[in-house]
Length: 578
View 1 (cartoon, helix red, strand yellow):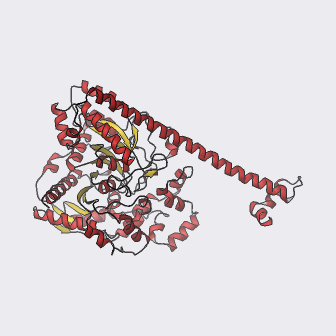
View 2 (view 1 turned 90 degrees about the horizontal axis):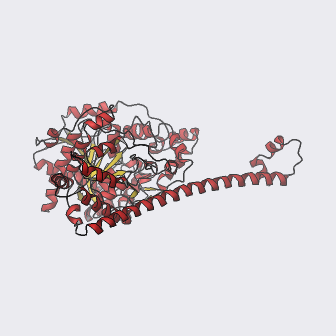
View 3 (view 1 turned 180 degrees about the vertical axis):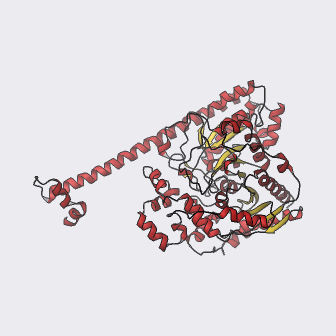
């Protein structure tokens, strides 16, 4: 009892109450009551969070039921609509039929609404239905001019603002705050005739490659429920791969478009950071100047990405956000057939590629060479400096204080527990750890040292006279709940956020039995916890998609798409003949 009184401040309490005679039992009772009060306060606060979560979940169910009812009404009036005739088309094919009037926007919208509901039942990828899509449909049919995306249903990553809808970023504290206006990108989509109809799931804070939050739960992989669809554009990857959306908009601060695209077997583009407007697209951790964030499209093929960029890079965008450079889409670059001088690498020297990642590059390199392109070996300079000092140090330059403040009043999802625990360390412990532990931990605790890295990388690029680079994409899909602790092994994607280079992923093949067998010998370069975890997290991936990454210099997004299209063409032809 004496030790408990000493720990809880018996002497201090008697000093505060000098005129009151209190024995040890009374003091203990007071302190126990105080402790109980703290626990009660925490319990009540947790109850408040649970009520907000329950309300958000009820709202989602209500909207999804509204979505089902709308589809039911439409099908009763139009029982002869063949969904497959719509769902089987590429975006370019569908757009052509909408433009010429063969298909009506109404038929297309309700067909995709029905398919999105089916996909959601299996994968849990939707967070919101946008009922305004029906009103927009009616207004669209009255318009005289058809935009480039006329009648195309579009899905949105959850943090894109849509008027009167919530952008929670997977955080309970962001619930109950509906957007006052559409984001700039949503406005431009509407001006081009697109119809945003659903919003899709993200991991808590969106600072994870996983797919879960405490509000809407876990999104599953479209081919294997034990695997993650990737993050943070988790719902977009799953919905598009499942056929529930033909075009989606995501965001990328370390691979958040490219990793879900790679995991789920679709295409995704991370443009140069200021090519598209971030206005009206909230992020939980603003101010990360060292690591650039981008908005970009996700779809089933490269031509769809190009059409989306062509539509978005218009006068309306530059009018709504004058801070953007007024660079329209360069069709001449995208459509060029000139042979490319392509740098390539199989490894960045930091994260050992999985056998399927390495094979994807080797295979694609050979196919590109056969079609007349020149492939030149390239090595990434100072990868450790980039990972430790620039990316991880840039994201957590404040010693994880902002993240801690953001999460301290939240219920913590498993995908964020590792970082949240780190955020609790006092400053002197963080400094001690930065000295004692592997840089993977220390770099998340101390600020970066500044950069000249982009200039160094560009100088090396120009010395080899490269047009573009072909390099590994992170694949195959990780096991569920493992992505949250594998931040350090995704250096292949976040390199190009540090550099602010446009980069995109293209699916080229699937994991083979031979890849799986070779994985048993995988050790990594450091033989540490993260190398072991990576091997374990990709086991059991036979049949899952594998991809490559295509990269261009800043503002040459169309050239990046050109390489992506070349890769897509040669690998599809190879698979067809196989």
